[in-house]
Image 1 (spheres, helix red, strand yellow):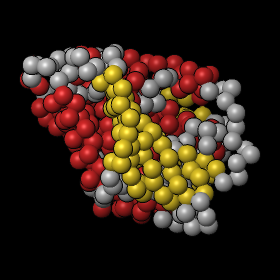
Image 2 (tube, helix red, strand yellow):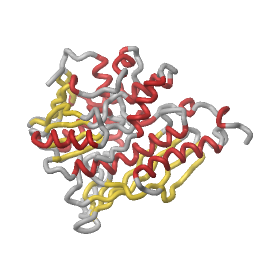
Image 3 (cartoon, one colour):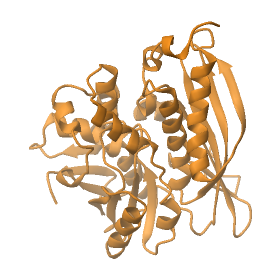
Length: 354
């Protein structure tokens, strides 16, 4: 092959979607897996498919449980090294969201070998390796195929003490909701694909998506932390709704308190909204209630599919300052309380402010 990396096509031009915006809409996914057998006969399987949680968890003994998850997607950026970093950070996030720490990963790779030169594919792999090195784990193998669209991700394996495990279905009425990262990755990716994202916007996008959610184990160790998940393709509203359904509670979200990446509101107002955002909103149905004063831009931001988004923590109100402090010490400057859990049916109510 004589084609050079500089002559290779843009990665985002080779795929119909990118990042966690590729995920199947929540309502469609629920229909697809509705007939799957439940794992009730397996007593040591602590977390399976029953609550749409972030990873599977299997108890090995009284002090150890193994976490297993997989995540992969098509390019959200054109730089292959950055694509690899984002995909790897996103995959490892599911381990952290369960309160665990990753111990190794396996590569999942699909590339159009007749279109992309080996140098580009190597950069994708190098990006993933860089993030795994930062997480202190090896990439111990994997699997690759020749595919029409570029795909990259990881199968991630981690460990957690069974008593420190955090599920997405164990929030309690009165809990505060704390979000670790700002929203807006999907909007930035839409602007990038249309050539309208400036250098500062791209820098912000990479900073958010490549930052490991490695505060997870420290958060899980706090007394009063009841539930955790990470915010990815279903948007903040979608993942919060999963938390509500698991716990049988209502969440009240305060729109003005939700942190946003700088500049994304303006981009959303200019029309840079992903199709996945609309699909997400349609999937929530009447389980999400927005205050009539909230505009379409705010709705788009709350539905925006996040790639390698932040951890969402449900904790006792007294614990909320400690949760924010753990996030801040780990470098999550935008971490803040965004709402609370209440008695009521499984739904999300969005108010303009607290």
